[in-house]
Image (cartoon, rainbow, N blue to C red; front, side, top):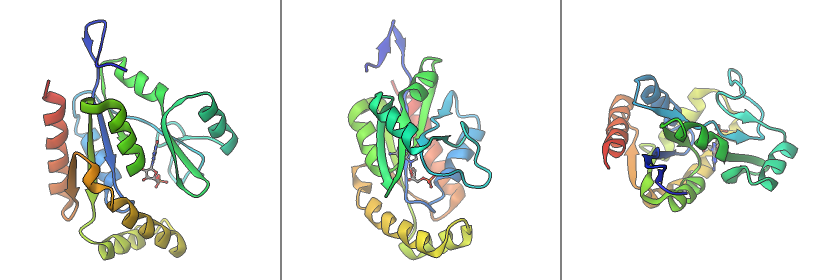
Amino acid sequence: MTNESNGRKKGKIIVVSAPSGCGKSTIINSILDSGQPELRFSVSATNRRPRPGEVDGVHYHFLTTEQFRDAIAEHKFIEWEEVYPGRFYGTLKSEIERIVDKGGNVILDIDCKGGINVKELYGDRALTIFFLPPSIEELRRRLIDRGTDAPDVIEERVGKAKFEISFADSFDCRVVNDNLDKAIDHTRELITDFIDKD
Ligand code: 5GP
């Protein structure tokens, strides 16, 4: 894939990764809501069940495991990962094309391995940002307060968080979310600078 097509500059790819409970969705939604120019969310595909309030085609494209495997076989993904055992997530080529072909920039909320793969694929056209919690203890407290997961799932997420944080240095930038407003401002600044840069 190249940066230019028919002489028109193609969109930039912003990748955001974080252990769950770092406020990633809140930060992304705030930036999207504040009218960041031509920044659009890439809706991933997954075989996990929707959580209450999640809408198919908005939060994820919810697929069966068979549909997900078919999509892999048909090369429909730019990248995909088994983020949790038996739970698959992937970035659809069609999502990126849908946004970039209209001249937009894309924001991807994907796990750290996927983020590193997208950086390898897009190079300087991609900016990778990693959100860090102030501490593991604070992360566990936030997951408990969120109230969406059972205790064993929370421990699974904390274990996964420790693993993911070990990849933070492979990202272009790191943002510690110890104050939500400051983390939003910092992230918005990183994205704006990157989009404005030639
Ligand atoms: P959740 O189930 O909490 O929505 O997401 C679990 C994890 O999957 C998060 O770390 C999220 O960033 C990651 N994820 C979501 N979509 C994708 C994707 O398309 N590719 C990859 N590699 N990870 C994804």
